Length: 310
Ligand SMILES: [Zn+2]
Image (cartoon, rainbow, N blue to C red):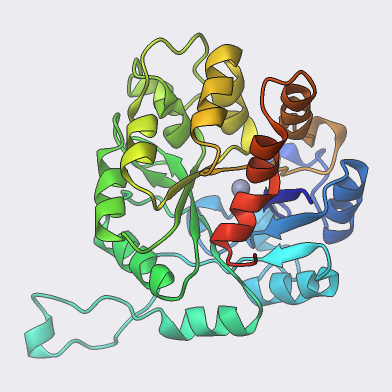
């Protein structure tokens, strides 16, 4: 079985991209059929303002419940995630004693409802907050208590785009991992994958750095030290990281074979939106650069394990 661990079905066009073709549920299923992918993890969008563009904002059925209810019609192919923003929740007026230390949000009612709706994880988190913000740590800790892995988009450093942000060396991610040891944390996106190389600068954390990987980055150190950290190879960022230095990429896939998840993050249904990840992995398999067992773990078994579906 092959599982695409990172998909969306929503209008993700920017106002200047109205010629692109949004992914609908039907188009998502068609793509899975075309690529011989058995199942996909569907992550609803539209919980954080940073990623909500006008096309999505005015798109009917774009609330979380509608997205999940529509996806439930394809339960043989889609595995559902819920989604949340760490800033959600409000206690109303604070008491005198709470003013200096306001309470953190209790996400129980959200997580309980997501479980009832069949969701097995939460993501992708796209709020533009520091990875170690107390609200982020609070949400991730509670997801762990509910046995739900959390996938986040990592950017950085600083504010201004979507995704949790971090500095060079991922110090904030390390703080999150220390503070939420019982939560499966799945990282993704440029701010995460650029850290595969040790020669990173603040500028190239936002992009897709090229070239051989001479010195390992903080990503490998964190994967070795924190068993609750996983990595989703989706999107250009993940593909670039594992393919920019093919020889090193194979070593990376081999060492971290128990912690990597194949995904695509296809955001558009047109030809241009297609992603090369699966054919790349299949090529490594057919040329015997990775074993069948590594291929199976990355494309399926690791996903089933962290979603507790084995
Ligand atoms: Zn995504």
